[in-house]
Image (cartoon, rainbow, N blue to C red):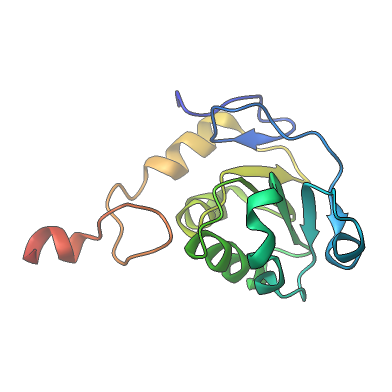
Length: 148
């Protein structure tokens, strides 16, 4: 797992740059803080509000209050498709079997509540080498490989 920086007891990162350590402000607070570079989206927040400000944001942390709440996947994809290139972190109730799907939506760092075993993570990321559908990442789906 050469692209995994850091340890699995804290923050999992799939980026080469330094982690963004500035505390993230809520979306409501971001509207009044013109110099904030880190924003935290809660499960019900609309990620599209950030689109005009993507150039100034270094970190968007998306909250997953429970592993069953999939709204964060949509927020990630909206931001990546709008051109956001900064760090996109999934935080909260993040499970190891969700990480491959989260990465396909555009997440590149993770702050899970519970520790994730490195060997389990590596097996999970290698389980399906070719995706079946297009996503926010650049991986080519298997149908396109087969049929051009």
